[in-house]
Image (cartoon, rainbow, N blue to C red; front, side):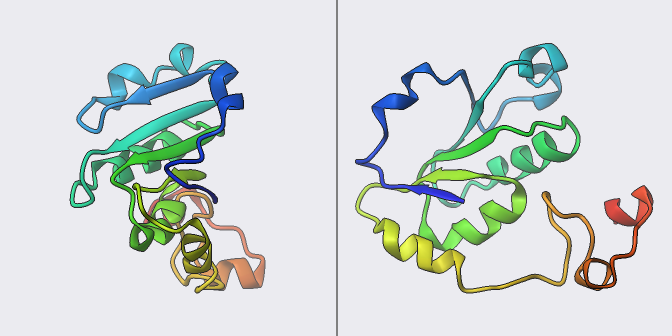
Length: 141
């Protein structure tokens, strides 16, 4: 996951084709194949850290809509949320002002693997270790 300090947003991002989605938006209406075509990044907003609707949006964008580009978390993004963000499908996050990007990177290194599957790797650990395939019904469970 790419961690970005609030004061370090790159000016080179100006040419990146980005779609900003409010956390109360209906993805079924917005995330059509035509709307996602050619997009490089989707930004999902966390208006406050206690509002987790963007987690669900990220999972839906990855699994249901097949978006493979950058999903960026913006707004009130705290270090404690980063592991769950990564497992939900976020690939970058802009930290809330005043938070240390190095501490955030350390947080992501705490856990080497997870037993459960997630948005990017739906197979549980035993299936990944054994190299066994799972059915779509097993992946959805």
